[in-house]
Length: 328
Image 1: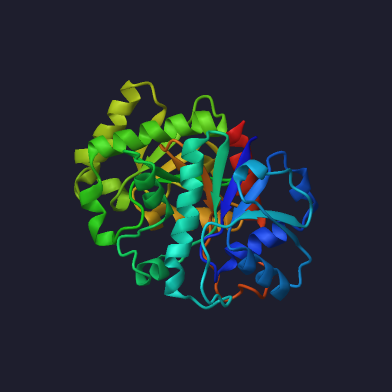
Image 2 (image 1 turned 60 degrees about the vertical axis):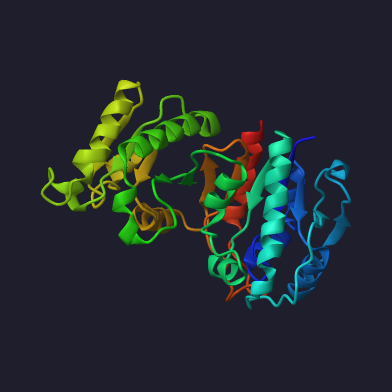
């Protein structure tokens, strides 16, 4: 049976709230693919009580026991217990709980191609404070866990798709990580991912420059001349419809947005502010170049509203839908 495993991420954040609220909707029962929440059952029950949601919980001793979704009913599998969770308050002792849930989901998907993984938001600082000093983010962890040579973060909405060359590194380290061979691989992975996961037959990919005005022919930085343009030219020879480097300050005008299937940005905050301005709460994060299906929400833990206010559900709903599509 095909199934989706949901790793809710930081237990003090809204990742728990989101799945409880989504399970209360009629669309939950309409999903063709059942969802199993990887979580401590006591956490789910206490958060449901705090949110005043009437949810029935069914603990699975094995994923083989998975059943179809029913409205206001969550089936969960517990692989680890969390400690002293208060909504909105971080506890570094739960870093291992978060990573145990994530690892179980990843490993299950590696063993069974009929399993997809959807992840909720994590608090990177809390993971590091909890002893996982090399933790940089979901994408990097999944790449390592799946032993993938290359993994690409792609955020997508109905309005825009953006892939990243570098992810969670300081801005001071970005330039030295822009290499021709690396960029060529990313362009090829994005092209293949758009075709396979989004059913775009002939993707139009636009690559951003690193420097202002895409370097002004080497007058404002040389990364475009040394790495970005050569990578684009080489990929064009492979038959990929890719153009650039484009100056980031004009790359997202209305005409280009309509004529672009995906942008490739050099660093995290070069293009994601545009995506989130256009589609916050509606976009998803999916990882390309890995042997499993993984999608995620496009936002953080929102500790200030966890266990209290109603969060936007659109991103998690879209992540679930996209995981279901990719499983077909």
